Length: 361
Image (spheres, helix red, strand yellow):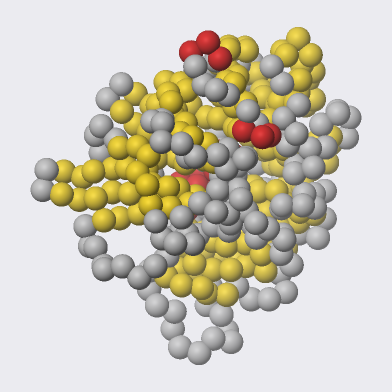
């Protein structure tokens, strides 16, 4: 909607609800007495907005991120991390009511994953994995196990029936799959190095696991895909990768490689088994995009670089290689680019921008 330009107000991390009817965003409004930092819920169709939370102090949860915003699968609840004088808070607000946000948990580091239907939430707080139930109250949060900090985000299967996590040893770790909330059913599915990160395939039959074989390296050095039921393991990537993202239908994986010598990041795509690998784009990500890549296993659930049909990706940053068929020069600064996942079409420049995400539908 057309509105007067306000040079004292800034918006960060637009986050689509799964049904595409709402956007959540962090807003920072500069003033004489300091900045006011809020969480806003927007209606994209009419341009209306509602403030659902205001920070006690102007602070960040990560570089360039006043909050971390993540919708429940039913688009009813908005969960978010906020930094307060008491520490990190995980809050959830019912966007269909006028009730204030509920405090789910306090602590750091804190990572979480919504379950199917928005009825459960799996958390990794400090060294402990916990399970929260809707509605949130102090009695609904149960400690499941102590796991250490060899990974960040525990993951619930797409149907919510299973959970995956890793347990740290002295030098190595094991990834376990268990029925949600039932640790006694846990079974080890793969041995991994530390740190490690994992996400379920959209169909729930496979899990992608990245880890480091050499603990002195700054990034992951391989990505393997395992059958959730155990047994089959295939290696998709064996190079220095920073992040990876399943395609929406689970037939491909996109990953980002770090080239430290040239100080570049490269987007690549392959089949789940590593076949038909192709490089799509070389760039230097925007500062906010770099935050997303650094915490990709959390952002993968809330901010999608993939188009819903799995044909394209969207990225933001500074392109390094110029297109030979383009006339004129590319304007300076961070830009938004659309990438063809098949690698046939050249990357297409969309607009100036520091972040971009596809809606889920």
